[in-house]
Image 1 (spheres, one colour):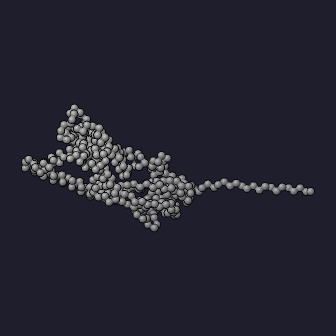
Image 2 (tube, one colour):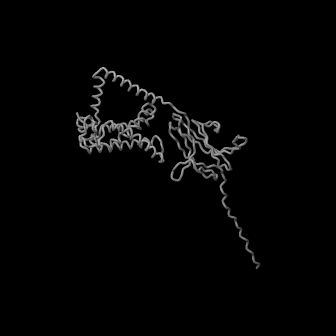
Image 3 (cartoon, helix red, strand yellow):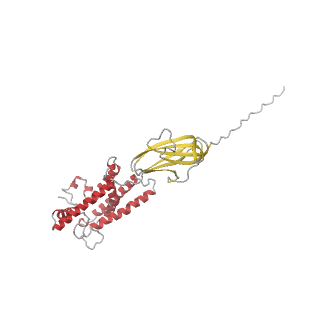
Length: 360
């Protein structure tokens, strides 16, 4: 039967030679990253309990474990039940220290990744976060595997699965006293209760207030989106761009439709009447829960006048035949002025004077 250092006769023999020496615990990290991606992205799986469970472990343990594996490839004093090959070498850490550091470094790595993404064009969305964390975790696992391979086999960290299983079996099924047996029953019951409680909370989370964000942004020359410098002076027929944003916090996938109009209105006695309206566009998208949708809209009005109202109406699903601010789910208004294009200068035609005819 093969070991971590001798793949002959082991299940690793089915893999290419470059993968046979990859540590088993880091193989589990790679497999977990793949499963977490499937749980987050596959249409059917992401609606099940698997998604929050994988997300929890992926956020608080796995990236940190891979990072610690890259930092400490040596085994510690109690990693496999015996002292390290070189007791004077303080670089190794034992199993409990490794687990504790895995939680701590994960809690540090994940917010840092989010902070960096917040200042990139991709922003804090599921796709960029998943790709970034997965890439870092796989990189750490690869570095950890290479650093372990460079060590003497007796000095490498190895998870003692066989010893853990044997100790657990002996403790549970062959206790030394009745007191130990009773404590084992209590421990198993407590563990099942804890797992069941976490599973219930994950399966039936308490949902907060359901709402949708609706806002306008502008784009700077460097691609940054800001809530400032909105265009308010238009020339008829000359487009200017704004960015329409929708944030879905409805706890479910929602199909949104945005209707844009330029309206001439009359305001009297705190009452607004729409006198005329020019349609400027209509666009829609289906947005997942806790996701954001941005749409660039080129506004090119032809209606002219001062104090016109550029209006955006948000609807869940299809809008009614006559969209108004009263029947919209959310609405945005921007007061603008639209002037007619300047008349091109005309060149006055000059008629040449008739020449005098001389008498003969």
